[in-house]
Length: 379
Image (tube, rainbow, N blue to C red; front, side, top):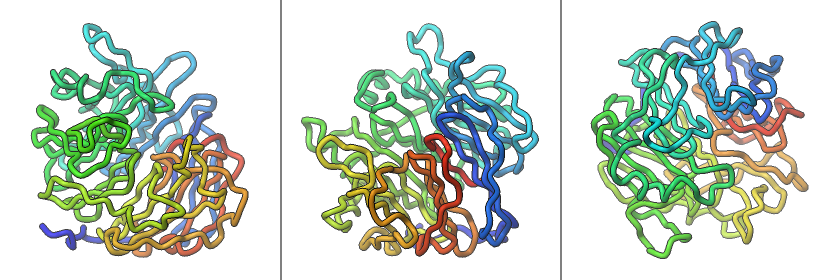
């Protein structure tokens, strides 16, 4: 399949709802189809660290929340009533006792294939992959990864330089094949399975790993965020060492971030693919110089959009602060809705949510004064 193919467009949503996962709890931000006025909910799970919150697109009501609590530790909360009430999972993601490994927190949640209702995947810190077949009530390790004889080599051990711990993230399910999976690991790289996680292969050719002594290693990379485009044969990646694109069946990534302005660079955390157009994607660069202060370059935040698969990039900052805005956007805190003219949204490390109804051409503030935002997802 060529990279020009795209998914069929469904009817536009009647409303937009954003789930806002923060360092101090979970909020929801809701608008009607116009996306002009927004209402912020009261918090849920207040005081808990919420790393990710996702609504199941297959039933539209089941919500899973990956949280690290002060008294329960790392867990997953479930809601079957659109987030009005929550119950803790009966058996959250946890490594086998014999492994000698302990989950610090569940970091990433992904609903399974449309043909597999009730199936979910979770990625943890340190790097582990888990699967639920009962809508998140109980979880079991995907032992094809967790017990793989090369797992420790792939991950570089359970301690690395990631500021808040190593992570397995970007769990992607091919919409055409429930057995075809991708994962990203910080650190470790991108890996692929063709048999529902029983076996895995590294998929990192062409990706720089400037922090390693070997110039083109098989694994050990640091992808920050990996996304399927509207054409599932095209993947985008925001990496510790640049922005990349992969068009399957090729196995070598192309560095498309080289087209970014030299004064900005191609370092950042989030990556968002357009819901309908495989050639369009967005990134939010951060200052990648010297000690990586994790702020917008020069205190002048902007998204950058490509409409030609990364050949060129356009700065989009109309409505954003023009100076002295020293925040950035985490890897899960940027998303897009499925309207014909896509809305794009991001949450900042200073607790602000910004939105665009016109694919990033103009921006406005939707909410302020929240805790540090970890993740933003369309419900």
